[in-house]
Image (cartoon, rainbow, N blue to C red; front, side, top):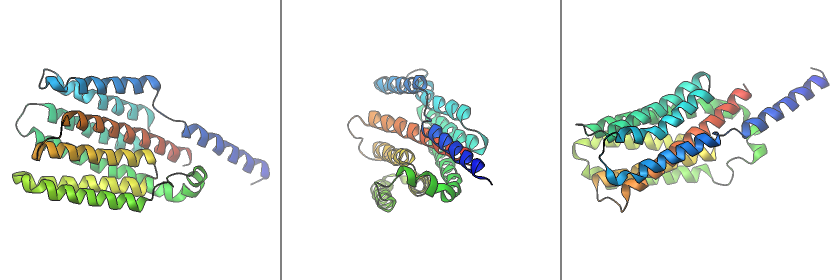
Length: 253
């Protein structure tokens, strides 16, 4: 390879890296997501009401369409599937039907599995290109992943100790769910090498902890507001972070 070709490749990769680094959801779509989230949170005091499930799921539908339009290949399928499973879970939890909580729990269990698969898909690419892509940007160096992982495990363990005695016939289902969301958080921290993805995963764990407290123990003040606010933030961080990371992967494939 001659010097001119080598130089051209380096320049090309520089511009690709710079362009990918600036990938983010369009402002109009972000504002639509924010407004849709606020609208649902503002109507929580009216629940249950006609069409609640649609208003609740609409923000996640926005992320779902964004993932479909932005990603490509297997990444499009994995991330969109995680968001679709989440959307279905939102619908189940908002519907006044028998066993809606179980159906919602199963849907989000599947969503977390899909997120874990997406982090696994990122892992091999990160190992190959981490020195070139992340070290030069000082990526994820301010917080030690080991500390975050220990915090996640301890928090999940405390929640299990606190919640499980009150779950009765849902005991094993809740154990499985705590296990998968903990694994989702750990894999996000260890494999994604993304502050936004790790933040989204951790906030998701917090959101579900508040929900579990509300369902099985004494609800916190303004619990529905806290649950949905943290949930929408978490899903946005995960969708935006994964879109950006997979864009890196495709740019350097």
